[in-house]
Image (cartoon, rainbow, N blue to C red):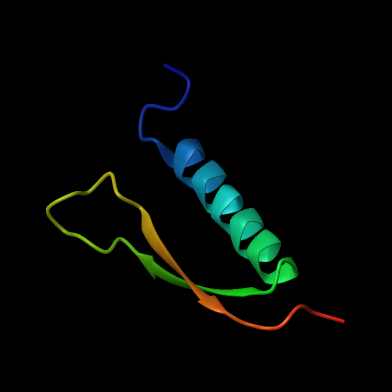
Length: 57
């Protein structure tokens, strides 16, 4: 197994979350992110809620 502890998977999920946040901001939304929101669901890494915002210049 190439990633027995899941470290690389967690890093790639963080990168995907960063790209999601950046894309949402470019579309005029303000993402509200809660990391590891539910201790009973350890595989749920984040909840993302959207709020209206302004498009960047």
